[in-house]
Amino acid sequence: MAGAEKPGNTQPGIAYMAKGGWHWEKGGMILMQEEADAKLVKEPPHWMLFWPVDAEASGFPSRPHKKFGSYVVFDGTPYAHLMIHQDPMELK
Ligand SMILES: [Cu+2]
Image 1 (cartoon, rainbow, N blue to C red):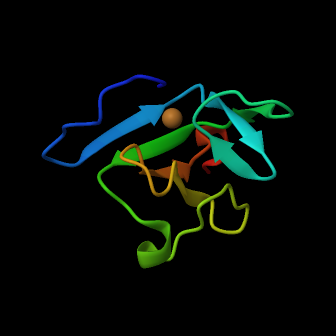
Image 2: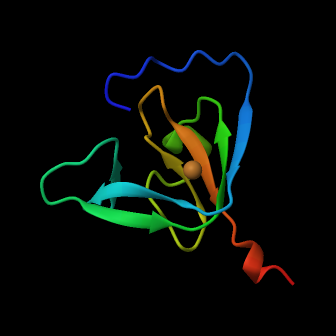
């Protein structure tokens, strides 16, 4: 997303990544781009809610958290969104 325009959405959006995705992570924090000593981490299938969200105000963590399964990605940036992990293979 380096050099990408700031999101201009005026309504909330929702997306589902059925095959999950990947992100760069360093010290438990998700990075917007690769950095030295960062590792590439696989994300499971997940929903993404695209609307300005603030980790502190929402109570969601700003990094992947097994207990909650949801967290704010890119907290404190125009690209912040809520990530909700869901694995359809685990549904009964
Ligand atoms: Cu995603």
